[in-house]
Structure formats: structure tokens, C-alpha cells
Image (cartoon, rainbow, N blue to C red; front, side, top):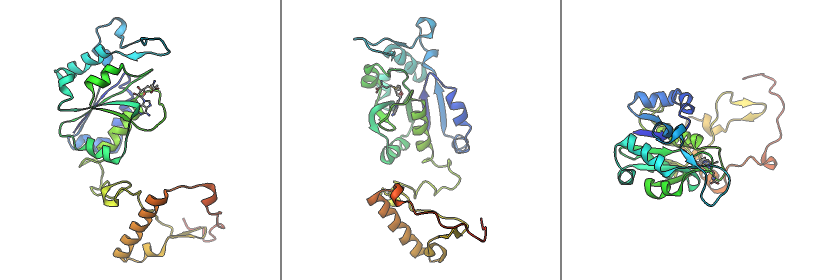
Length: 246
Ligand code: SAM
């Protein structure tokens, strides 16, 4: 799988590319490439944006610049590119990213292309003519599309074989088909008791079927009621554990 990102700030991805699961993905043959539209513009001063027609604050990414960038990278008209490749504009008003969309993107045979906006965002013709998807990572406004692209890259890459150390880790987790779309069940580790807070007995029982059923029930409950740590629901702190066990 090839994940391409068009960004005015490719250096943001240097740190991300060096994270272990991303290194695993790259070692397994997946690709994370970044391209700067400024490297493709013919406008003076490496210009990529301009003031909005009709007035208003901010700058808008130009359609001709994005066309040159996409043509330069893929060697074809971006109008044709989108007929065989998923080209995603990251934008706050887009389809809100969820696990179903991540599965769709992760199943793309050739790869995906993520366009990061900045300032006021994209000239609308970029979305209309070059993109297959407009995707939002939530209903709030980031300064730019880079963090959104990293979110999309991350959730897609960790679905792919070779990215996570344990191949099953992404199979049964929050919102997955294995949990019928519910959030994941609670996890516990040592110590079995801390400040009087005990791990549920069933998890210490060694009965795999009971554990499986308990986990499924907790997961369903969270799906129905949501997982909220409202102040009213937070248990008062127990006394310090006299054993000092950690
Ligand atoms: N003027 C735009 C609006 O009101 O919708 C906001 C532009 S925002 C400051 C600049 C860029 O950040 C956007 O073009 C987009 O690429 C990215 N961005 C901001 N919030 C986002 C979100 N919630 N999801 C995805 N991308 C986002």
C-alpha cells in the first residue's frame, strides 16, 4: 500500500515516519511518501495559493498548482487519476473518518493520496475534479491538514499486515467487525489489587469462554451507553494499598 501526502510541510512527517509501527510498515513493503506542491509550481516565489474571489480573509490553494503537482507525481491528468486511485482532500466539512472508512481506504489496491490544506483550504475545483473523497477527522478546525493526514495514514497503516507486532492486535479492537462495531472491553494488568481496586475475578479464572463472554458483554455495554468518565461516575479513591504492591 502506498500512502502519498501532498503537503506544504513535508518535514512534519520526518518524526512520524520514524515511529516503530510506521518503520514496521515500511519494512513490510508499504510506502509513505510526501510531496510538496511548492516543488511543482511555476509561479514566482514558489507561490501555491491566492486570495479568495469574493473577498474574505486568508489564502486558498490554487487549482492549477495542485493540478501540476498531481500530474508531476503521477504522470497523468488528475481527472483521470481519480478514476483508479483514491484521492482524499482533508477538510473539516468532509465525511467524518470512522472505522468503516478506514477499512475502505486500507483495501485500496494501489494506494491513497492525501491532500493537506492550509490557510483557508482548497479552491473548490480541486475537490470537485481531482478528489474522490473529502474527509474530516472531526468537527473542529486544525491549522492545517498535516495532523489529519497523519491520523488517516496511521489508522490505515495499522490495518495492514506487517505494521503491528502482533498480527491479531488490529482485529479485535474498538469499532472492529470482530466486536460488531462496539468499543473495546476493559483491560487490566498487574497488580490484581491496587488501593482496594480489584481486577474482575473472571479475568483471573483461566476460563477462556467465560472471559470471552465477559469481554463481549462489557464491549456491548460500552456500545450502548458509551464510555464516559463523567465526574458523577468516577468512584471515590480507595485507601492506599498497605502492601505497597505495584
Ligand atoms: N476555512 C476552512 C473551513 O472553515 O472549513 C478551514 C481551513 S483549515 C484552517 C486549513 C486546512 O486544515 C484545511 O484545508 C484542511 O486540510 C485541514 N483541516 C482543518 N481541520 C480539519 C479537520 N477537522 N479534518 C481534516 N482536515 C482539517
